Image: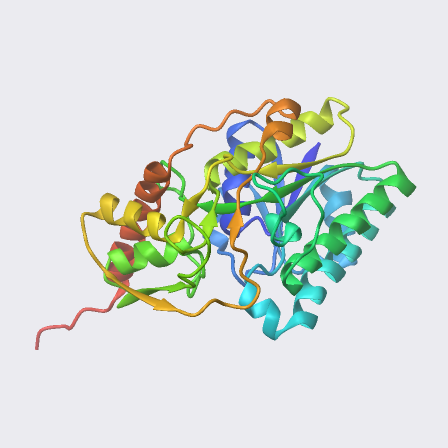
Length: 337
């Protein structure tokens, strides 16, 4: 039996595909390559280039490969973009998942793992935030993910499907072996921007908001290493395979770092200074977000290996330096006369 991974050529999806392969699982990928890269899909894993909301494509892949479970990453993830284009986010996130679920139901796929977000909580009343906290998204991105969670719950109840919703906090870092990382041009992840600044690819890094009631006035985030998050997906699959009931789980480490502390971690990793420019708060940004990880640690057989901001920064920097070398090697050199 096979695992279908949608968005498996993207940042988190490709790390999860690699982790599944390392664990001996059979995997197939559907990805439209809008933000993913075909060379991120490991050798021997079939890649179908198309939309996760294309029901004919999905049903054909399920039937041809004997798919027993779906891990769904495909979607749009940039909060400011969702403020400018809410309908695009409801289409790419909520409507696509509706079609994917419809195909899964028709093909009797009984296990589903969904890539959600801590953005569903908005600005929580208490910190760290537990899964039972009120859901009050501040952006169409967060709302589109929450709508999908609700839809998934209803579909599972009606059709006997078991699922795990994983609410990501701030994902960062890269594969420790240097095989994979965040390669999307124009990515908006804080650590990605910081390592681009540290490697001279950006003139500065913008910090949006310095007047929050936090230790240094900047926002606070709970970072999780992408490889630990990939292993959480593998653990969620094992949990469902063992008959575990549907669950919604936070994915973080349970500790917070300010934006300025994160920038300092990249400075330490690189040994370089770079410019920081302070700007006004952005609409849709959340002040503080730290995970209560009690439930995931009790539910899944999962122990993080890279729970350190300095390790995350080092791995992100190593990947960025590798990308930079590869790009320089690809620049055509002048031919002597």
